Amino acid sequence: MKILTQKELTERLLYDEKTGVFVWRKTGAVAGGLCGNGYIQIRISTVRYSAHRLAWLYVYGVTPALQIDHINRVKTDNRISNLRLATRSQNMINTPPPTTNKTGVKGVSYCKKARKYRARCWVNQKRYHLGWFDSIDGAASAYKDFAIKHYGAFAVDGRGSAA
Picture 1 (spheres, rainbow, N blue to C red):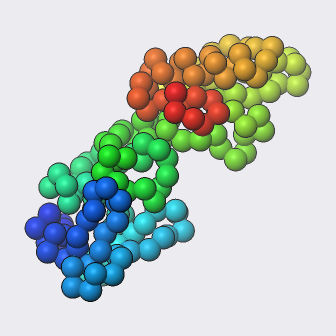
Picture 2 (picture 1 turned 120 degrees about the vertical axis):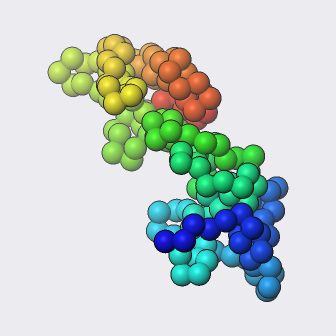
């Protein structure tokens, strides 16, 4: 597969860094559409590209080997100021609690047998037990502190907000 260059991209599309929107140079029409995974994709010469990766190529001239993270976690917000390079681990930490989480707090579960909340977090493919807590707030706080320590700017508190 031929690799798209910045030159080829800028010849076909215009990108507005402030809005994150691409338009076709020839027609002025908005390029791309929403895909099933929630991201905007744009087809160029029969190849589909994620708009956030095209934004990075457009502005910086390279297609990074790393992932590109949406800082505010809005998959359609492709403003360059909302995009940053991230490892898979960093990108995964910047996610809200999974819909299957019964407590609604990322990294926190409730153990009926112990009648306590448990906080846990993954770092470098290793799960860390952060403790047992009488309250959901205590467990959420432990998760948040741990996430900030290990993930810094990528950390999201247990409730899915930027830490």
